[in-house]
Length: 452
Image (cartoon, rainbow, N blue to C red):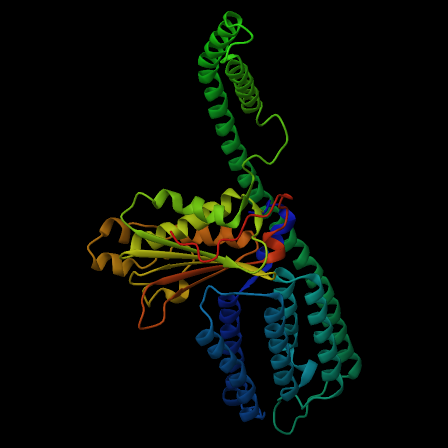
C-alpha cells in the first residue's frame, strides 16, 4: 500500500479512544455526585440540590448513550472528541454557576478538558477548548449563584481575589496545554519513528532475501545458458549462410543474449532504483492475500467492481500482513465459504471480508480488536478445537488492526445480521490516502463481478 512515514502516522496516533473518555467522565460524575451530596447533607449548606443533580444526570445520560451506541474499542475523530470535551466543559461551568462560580475551589477542574485535548487532539482543537474555558471563566466571574455556606453567614470573596483565580485559570490553561501537548507529541513521534523503523527493516529484509534468490537463480542459470550460447555459436559457424536454419540460429543467439541481459538485471536488483514488485493493482493485492488459501478445502469467492479506473498502489508489507491475518481468521472459522468484495469509487476504496462461520461471541463483540481479546474462542471451544480456541493470546487481530489503520484505513468488525450468520471485516481507505505514492502506470482493466 502506501509508503509509511512518521508524518503519516500522526492522525491515527492522535485518535482518542472512546472508552477512555467514558471512563474519565464516570469518574467525574462520581466525584461531582459525592461533592454535592456531602455539601448538602454532610455540611448542611444550602444549594440548589435538584438543579445540580440534573446537570450531573445530563452527563450520565450522554455516557450511557455513547456506551450503547459504540463499541469500547471505537476511536474518536477530532470533531467528535472536541464536541464531547466541549460538552464536559459546559457541564462543569453549569455546575459551578449553581455553586459559587470561580469562588468554588473546584473551578480548577476547568483545566481537565484542556489537558485531555492537548494530549490527544491537534493544537487547533486545544486552542478552541482553551478559549471556551477562558470565556466561561470570564462569565462566571460576573454572574453566578452564591457559594454554599453556613446559614446567616454570607460568604463572598473580594473581586480582586476572584480576578486572581481567573488569571490563574488562564495561565494554567496556557501552560498545561502547551506543556502536555509538547510531551505527548514527543512520545507520539518516538513511537511513530520506532514503528516506521520496524517496517523499513522488515521491507529491507524482504528485499535482501529477494536479492539473494535472484543472485542464486542467476548463478544456477548462468552455466546452462553459457553452454547453449556456445553450441549455438558453433552451429552458426558450421551452417552455410544460405541454409534454411540460418535465421533460426540467429534468433536463438539473440534470445540467449536477451536471457543474459535479464540475468544481469536480476543480479543487480537492489543496487538500482526502481519499482520492481513495489506497485500493484487493487485486484492483485486481493489475489496475493488469498493465494496461500488456494490449496485449502474452502470456497473463496472474490468480487471486484468499482467506479472509474482501478486503484494502483504501492505494496506495503504491513498492510498485506494485516489483511492476510484477517483472512486467516475468517478461513479458520468459516464453515464452507469466505467472500472478499473489493470496491472503489472516486472517494474511497473498500475491502469486505465475510465468512459463514458462527461470528464473534457476544461477550467480546464490543471489545474485538483490543489486545489480549481472543476472538470467537467460545465457538471454537464448542467445536472441540482447543488448540485454536483457547491458547491464543488475542494479539493477532489487534496487530492486524493497528497495521491497517496505520495506513489511513478504518477497520470495522461486526457480525452479519440475521437470518444470515458469520463475521464481517470491512476496511475502508479514503481514495486520496490509498493512491498516495502510487507510481504512474497504465491502469488495469476493471473486472466487473470477477468471481473465483
